[in-house]
Length: 534
Ligand code: GLN
Image (cartoon, rainbow, N blue to C red; front, top):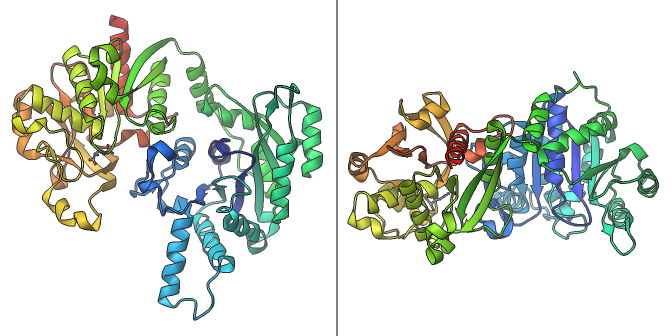
């Protein structure tokens, strides 16, 4: 039977609970345990698919096409495993299923209530996550004290009687702020949030304290005393130069051993963290640097392109360079021109996006990269704008001038297929999740991957229009990858260009620090060459 670690957060949001949970996952997995990890999100959305990246950061897509919270991206990057829709549970999902059961009459006329029906449903999902693992790490989104979070906290409280006290462990991530006026770290917020947890019957056994400065022994003892944990169970989580250092620093403080002890578990072996140390060393002492301009439209939210940013860093570590990422609004290019905004870039990246705002700026960025022979990587929408740009300026196709990229799209080169238009009203038009792609031998992408066939994740409506394929190819666009079953173009490249690649999928979701993605490695490799010829 699986054992369960619950990770809650106190005081403020954005404490890095996801990174803490993911880091614990790394350490336990490296110890030879089978780890499963699940995010419980108290918001009412059924999934993150409808959430605006401005507000909530990136939507992470899994192999099975689930649109999930970005923390699942951290989990995958850290524990190096593919997760699924079952690894992200939201209030919306829980209520939908309880209400469906009620309509079917499954509750036999009983009154359906938050306790026990909602809380049971939550527990079922947690138990399901543990069917094939030794340990389930379950992170509860939000902050202790939030109204929405209460059923989740109640559910995890009940888990201890359901599966046995010795099989659950509660870990609370909290903030220890620095008060400038008093020139000291403050423990009171932590005490209060632990009290809040105790009030609802959860006794945290480990505290992970986020702070800017090292927590002195005296302070640690004080928190231990007030929060009723042994001093060694007060772990400090300082700001690190890279999130990939967190597993190492938690390991130094024996966080994983504390968890094992709390669950009376033996681990098959000591963890070998050498690959993680190489990642951290590579990140902290690069030999050179490249400047990448990312042309987006949600640039004010630091997490809107999280997986893209991480994938760039992974590739940078591999090439022993620091990747300086300058994010620019596509509309700035429309306003000030490509030269002013993009010159000096060693590489230009246009990430995914929705809607038509900023499209012209992105098309201009692709043109600038093509004409100046600057390495270019277009992801999803970034591939589509590159195709439109080529059709317009190289092939002079008249219809390619529309910048419409949303339903009702008038751009013929990147279009909605007929079968999609028919299902439009049902909302089933998105191509989501993993699809196979055959690579064309001799292309840059095929040599970057080094294999004949890949599986990549998708999240888009529009497709390359095959009616134009021949005309684009005649002028030097290379089709480098195709989803053969449906004859869909997945990868385009340019001849006579050092590295100009557009992919219809999202390779960023499969990049891991210890296994950088080949497409990103190819792109950064080309950017390094460009920087050396400057
Ligand atoms: N808006 C485009 C489409 O739906 C691109 C989507 C994306 O970049 N993820 O096809």
